[in-house]
Amino acid sequence: MKKQLEKLLAEAYAAPEPKKKQAFLMNLKPREVSLPEMLWQQAAYVRWPVWLFAICMMAFAIGGSILHLEDTERIVTVLMPFTAAISVLETNRSTRFGMSEIEMATRFSLRSVLFARMTILGILYAVMLCVSAPMLAYAFGGKLLLTATRILIPYLSTMILSLIAERSALGRKTGYSSAAIAALISLVTFWISQEQSQKFMVLRYTTLLENWGILIVLVLLLLTILEQQKTIRQVEAFA
Amino acid sequence: MDLENAYDKIYRYAYFRLKNQELAEDITQETFLRFISSYGNLQEYDMRYLYSIAKNLCIDEYRRVKPDPLPEEDEARAAQNIGSTEETAIVRVALSKLPVEDQELLLLRHVNGESVGTIGKALGLSRFAVYRRLKDAEEALRKGLEVSGS
Image 1 (cartoon, rainbow over the protein chains, first blue to last red):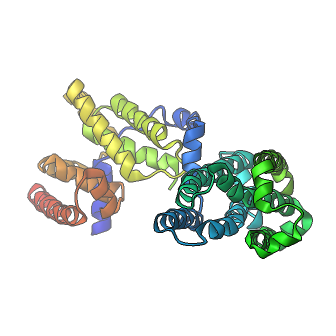
Image 2: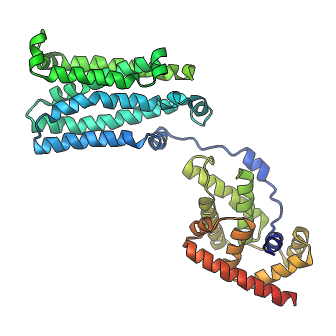
C-alpha cells in the first residue's frame, strides 16, 4: 500500500525533464581555493594530539612562568625535540600509512598538501615560541634572545635530522625514526642544561649561545627550510 | 548518492515550489554553484544544505517576481505528459487540498526519499515536528484520497 502510494506521489510530483542537466554537470568545476583557505582546510586534517601537545606545552610554559616553577625553561627546552618529531610524523602521515597514491589523486597535489601541513605546524609552533619565550625570559630573568635560541636549537636540530631520516630508506621502513632522534636530542639537551656537564665542554653552553646563538639558529633555520624543500620535492617519488 | 540524483531532487523540489521549468532549472544550478562557492567542491555535498539553499533561492525568486505558472491549458497538457493515469490525477487533486508545507514534506519524504533528520535540517524543524507533521499530512492525504476516490 505504502509502495503504491509512493509510486502515485512520484507521478503526481513529477517535473518535466530538465533540459540543461548534463551540460551543467559536465562543466561543474570546483572553485579555486586561496592559500589561506587551503591552510584552513588542511588544519582540520591535523590530528588532535598534535594540537593538544602544542597547547599543553604552551600552557606549561605560561603556567610555569606565572607560578615561577623551577626548571620550567629546562623542561620546555627538553620537550621541544618532540614537537619537531610530531611535526615530521604528522606531515609524513600519508606516506607512512600508504595513502600517498590516494592523496595524489585528490583535488590538491600531495606536494601542496604537505606544504600546507608544514606551514600550519610551523605557524603553530612559531606562535608557541612567541608566547613561551618572552614569558619564560621575563619570569626567570633571562634574556629573550637567549631563551628563544635555547628553545629553538633542539627543535630545529630535531627537525633537520628527522626530515633527513624520514627520507632515508631505513627511516621510511621503520617509520618512527624521528621519535628516536627526538629522544636522543632531548637527552643531549637535558645533559647540556645540567651544570655538571659544563666541565666537559670547551665553552659553556650559555656563553656559546650568547655569542653565536643567533647565527646558529639562522643556520639551522636555513637548513630546515632546505630539508623541507627536499622532502616536498621528493615526496611524490617516494609514493 | 550520485550528483545526477541530487540534481534531480533539487530540480523536482524547485519545480514544486515555482511550477516553472526554466526557473526551476536555473534555481537548481544556482543552488549547486552557491554550494561550491561556500564549500569549495561537491565531493562531500550535503542534501540538507542544498535544500536550504534551494528553498531560500525559491523564496527570493518568488519575492522578486511572482513566477508565471504555466497557463492552465499548458499546465494540463504538461500534467498529462508527466503522469497520465486517472489515479495520478486523483492524487494531484488530493494533494492540492493540502497546505503547501504538507505537500513539501510529502515530496521530500516520499518522492525524494530524504530522512526525517535531513528534512528537519533543510526546513529548520525539529525531528519530532517533522515526524508529527508528516503523519498529519499522510493522514490528510489518505482522507483526501478516500473522498476523491468515492
